[in-house]
Amino acid sequence: MAPKSENDEIHFRSELERMKNFTSVKDVQNINALVEKALLLKANPFQTKLAEGKRIGLIFFNPSLRTRLSSQVAAQNLGAQAIVLDIGKDGWALEFEDGVVMNGDKAEHIKEAAAVMGRYFDVLGVRTFPELKSKEADYSEKLLNAFIKYAGVPIVSLESGTRHPLQSLADLVTIKEQWTATRKPKVVLTWAPHVKALPQAVPNSFAEWMGKADVDFSIANPEGYDLAEEFRQGIPVFHNQEAALKDADFVYVKNWSSYNDYGQILSQDESWTFGSKQLKLTENAKVMHCLPVRRGLVIKDEILDGPNAIHLEQAENRVYAAQAVFHELLM
View (spheres, rainbow, N blue to C red):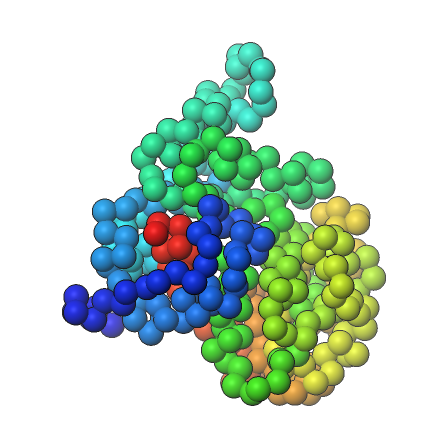
């Protein structure tokens, strides 16, 4: 797709109170306005005057495919320069504790590292990942909060121990563009089995965003897999998948490990794998997944290769979600 001419540049007026950071839905005053901005950018993505001369640093503490590439494309679409640092391979081991004598294997303190990055960039995106060993350590978000405290520039969470807000924004953008009826869509987040223990970040974040959106939302998971109360307040939780899926318009299929028995796999019940049997219970629902997906285990091929799957649309919308957020923070 070729960029439009300069005469076709969109002149955006923010409908939002300026965001200071983007780490959760709590940072967004008006999620509908942010979704609309993402859709407007999708219609005219090459807005290279909006962030001309700006730099966005993308700092990764763990591997990434969609988040890394979509963030780079989003920055370039706005005219900003995106620079990626894989800190696990290219940076020093960082110290996070205050008052320590650094005579061990940590070569640099986060106070200097984050502050220096803040001098180089106008916005910093930070990607972290929980170890799933200590609930207290993962849910404290020490690393992300250190960047917020010391960098001195807006911080975008590219996923953290507890949330994945750019994914959730892209999910909401996808639901918005797919839904044409006047009634509220029924959206169900359902657990599915997996061979590995996965974090709760994506389901936490999705539940948090859906709780603020104009949808009828519920969660289905086996006993022992309830998300933390702060993310599911007021949201119906079913321990029977069939009951939850009845008449659903959108089904988000995702695995997560236990929160209460932190990081543990309590079930690998493949009756929760989403296939044609589950789809028949719905209102011919659109089926969502954040990717990567284990075919045949989380979602069956018949669904992923069929007309109800919109996981690729979600992945595409990661670009425009990031583009909308970057623009808000760079205004």
